[in-house]
Amino acid sequence: MHLQMRAKPVNSPPDVELLLRRLKDDGVNLQAVGGSDVEFGGEVVIVPEDGQEDQARETLQRFSYPFREIHVDEDAGLDLCEVGNAVGGLHGCLKNVAQKNLEKGRIIRDITVGVPDDDQRSRGVIPVHIYSEEVRTPASVEGSAPS
Image 1 (cartoon, rainbow, N blue to C red):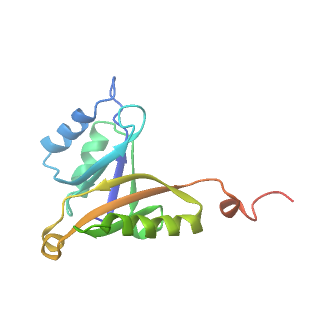
Image 2: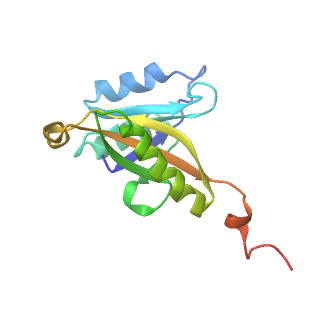
Image 3: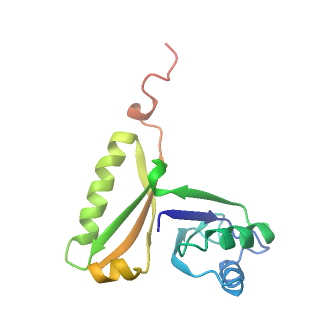
């Protein structure tokens, strides 16, 4: 669950169900789905099962859904937490991401909770993607302002 695809359901009217149906019909199993303002110009977040990324790309392209990919390991604002099912588990994850965001001038855009794979299930953790975007702050624009 290290790849997140963020697609716009650009049918008229926008239709998240249709986008998900097309992925289902093409055999794409999703480990997580989320997003914000998904039928109001926002993005649907999908996380295809490992090994099904190419099929998900092909489906999105075939139906002309604009999408972008974000990888956990590229420092592009996407964090993956494996959260235990205990009081404060999600809070601990969010606290760490919030601290990192302060240093990078980012704020949280959305949270996507996924379905654990076999390894995560055996360890009793749930995968959570936290996507953050950069905002203009003194820290994020330091040195870029004209003198």
